Image (cartoon, rainbow, N blue to C red):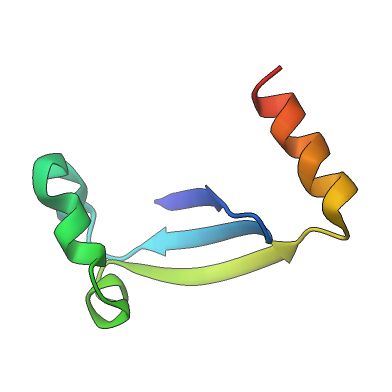
Length: 65
């Protein structure tokens, strides 16, 4: 399974390594408390950086019109 995550810098696509972790949504945040823990759950596959702030703001306006 792939997960899309948007940051102020751009988009990240992660591959979920342990899908069973996604079933425990009440405590999922604990698996991301440190980079070491997060690396056991997801792996970065691709990052697409925004070209400039205009592009970043355009994406925000598309998501929240």
